[in-house]
Length: 136
Image (cartoon, rainbow, N blue to C red; front, side, top):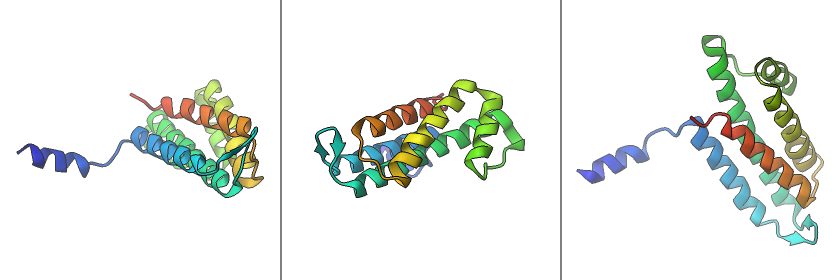
């Protein structure tokens, strides 16, 4: 009987919080493959992949946050500006974290391809803080 309950749990859909943490763990695992070269990561391919995956966790968490705040009126935001406007109505600290994560993970890490260890580290820290907003 215990086997059946374990199998049931394995097929349960993860919560948005669990899914966001899974994204962040995947991003962290990918970043390990980049290797370090002094104050920078050595392989930009892995840094870019990790940055975009971590940013995906941010968006997943923000969608859930807005879903909880807006209820039946929730519609998935279509742009970063849409996220900024709607989040700023709810929580100024969260908006600041969003801006920082966008700048470090999406723009610097993914789009521009920075290899800066400190920039990526700051982006991951902000991502974890954002994800914690949806932890029950």
